[in-house]
Length: 377
Ligand SMILES: Cc1ncc(COP(=O)(O)O)c(C=O)c1O
Image (cartoon, rainbow, N blue to C red; front, top):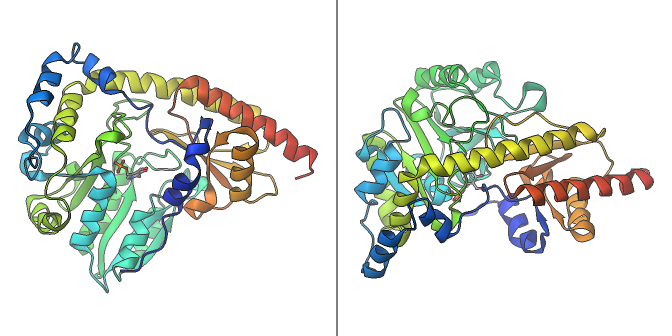
């Protein structure tokens, strides 16, 4: 199967290790094992459990404990609705490989995580792009979507909250999309790996799984729970869809790691504490970001409502890849160029790392903007 290179992942693979100020990172500052177990009162019991753990395969579909904890993040999910996968990336891949066939039509928003348009395209589907624009606050234009959907539409892929813009579709918007999909029996895959980090109101906004019988949610321990190193993600879907997905899962997963499954369960038991830590950090850093955007006269953004990233439009005559490379090489500030997300003229800023690093990184970018101005760009 031929597939296009994954722009953001290639960029991260090539340059992230050179970062001094990592504004490419999309996880809320990752936890150490100690920090995680401290939420559980020191974790003596957990460490003992790990010492004694026989490292056979894990429970094939994921332990009931972990699947139950994941189900509790949804209003209507139960254990049989939950499939444990290798990160959110494994979860998305499984959904596409299980449901999309050559000749199907798939609609994906853009910008988004590239899996959502490049995998179905590689599978032989006709992919239509629903653009999310700054003019519309990076939310889907429902009238445009209506014109795209037809009886061949197998799946509509959204990313909510959105990476890179941090936009958040509310219940009304999701219900409108559901109304359109239902008319033609299309699935909706909502990549919800950033769900749980809304800046206002309830931390967990509505999930597509709770709103639509053919709604599929993917999620993960990586971003919201600061545990990307566990490589644990999930799919939450109807039991019929889970059956289809598990046929494919048997070919590429067997089980996830036993220690990973166990620690993810511990983390979800302590989710209120982890989310309290992470929301505090996100809100503080979002303020730092907002002050920076307000100070700079030649950039603009749609203020993020959720997640960990913001998409900055800049008004300098330099392409985003050159700008990001020069920033990295000359200042140590690492960002993702819009080009890697098929959106020229933008930089993606991940603002969920430690506050000092975010602040210093943004200051470095400002210094570099002054140099661009001196160069007449
Ligand atoms: C929207 C989105 N989905 C999925 C993933 C995959 O994350 P993971 O596999 O770590 O859960 C990412 C990572 O950047 C992402 O931004």
